[in-house]
Image (cartoon, rainbow, N blue to C red; front, side, top):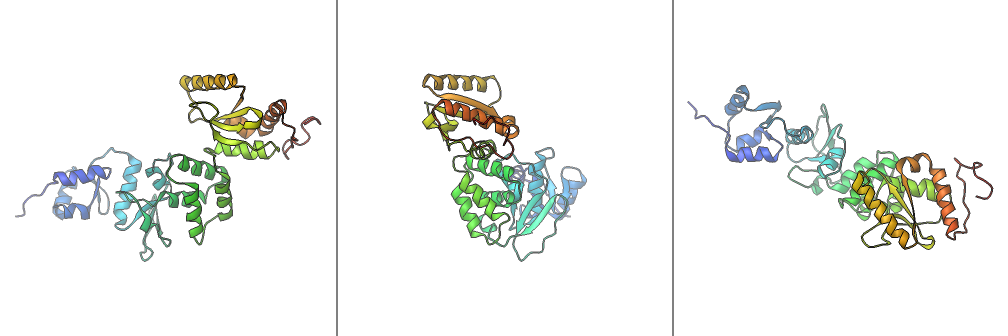
Length: 317
């Protein structure tokens, strides 16, 4: 008769580190037997999620658990990619399907909620973490190359803001790949994103500033101690603040904005403030207002109506 074997602390510690999951291979290495695994499931101490993967801690984060389960099923070597990798790096991303990269000589089968991909450009060589995920710049490129322009800008700018990647590293990684979907667009976006920290800032520069011939502003510059402004027209004493959802919610944030605007006014800076709906839905009206203030402050350039607003403004514009 065989001696009964129960999970020891090392196995439980491993499970806690893996969102409650262990593989059959890990359990056997740490002293359990196949009969132990069957008994633990039969007695409902463990839950068998899929072939070779067991759940010791039901109720933990379902997305992270699903990512761990996919990784354990795939076996070594493998690496999480796509939106799931970006989520593991701390980005707020929705994960519809988990992408798993494996060596090119394997013949993986995708399943429900999991897309298996063969890596032919060295993503696995650059993987990171105990729950292996491809490097952040690889994940950003893999996802961004399939996104619409504004969504790609939002992803890239957020990854840069969180110091997960740099624009230089992304340019280098794209240059090292033989194939990149929408390569020209991505390279153009990277060249255009210096100083841009959000998709809203990108849309302002594209649809308000450039589309209407306004002077080029500087981005993310400080004109007073302890503050930083989104758009700065130095020569004309004009600041434009773009208030998306992040950082501008609630009474405290509104008070900080008011205090900053007043401090800038004391230094003879005029502040215009626009929200997402203004910039995205009323870019022409915003441009006309900014141009009017710039004119009052000495700008002698020509306002250029874009195709959307041509004919709507007075001849004086």
